[in-house]
Length: 176
Image 1 (tube, helix red, strand yellow):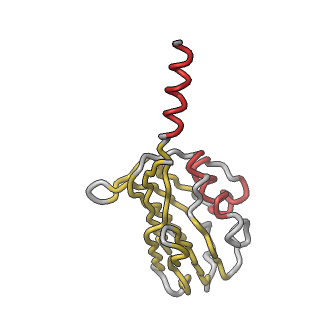
Image 2 (cartoon, helix red, strand yellow):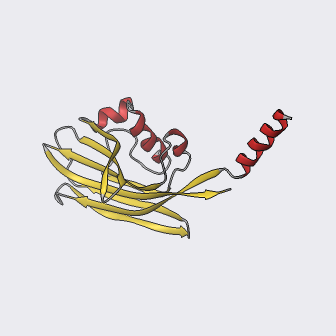
């Protein structure tokens, strides 16, 4: 009898399982030095009511002579966006692309792999991301509580910030 009650309880829990859905809500691209980089496209396209795709095109006019430093932050909204879990810096972006040695950054770049031409160095002069939808499967690797989030990616060269991407998204719950 106890086993039957336990099985019934487990079946009820599975029927009422709460899952989440994710959606990009905004993207901001800033080039701090127009002599080095220019964003030709930086926007979200609404595909369906609850689906948005990222489109981004960046033209590199002058490649920096020193290595490019990359900083990626995950922020959660709570009276403004506050640091949440990750703040990763790599002093050589090309070295990261070669070694792929950070789990959080790997989740982001592996999700982008089929939608971008930024996979290895030397970088092409026209960088792009096309038709990129929120990688819901990546939430299995990085379970986050429901809420509003942002990922800030800042790229620096020669001790100065050169460009910044800010991608905003929400995680909401729904019942199956």
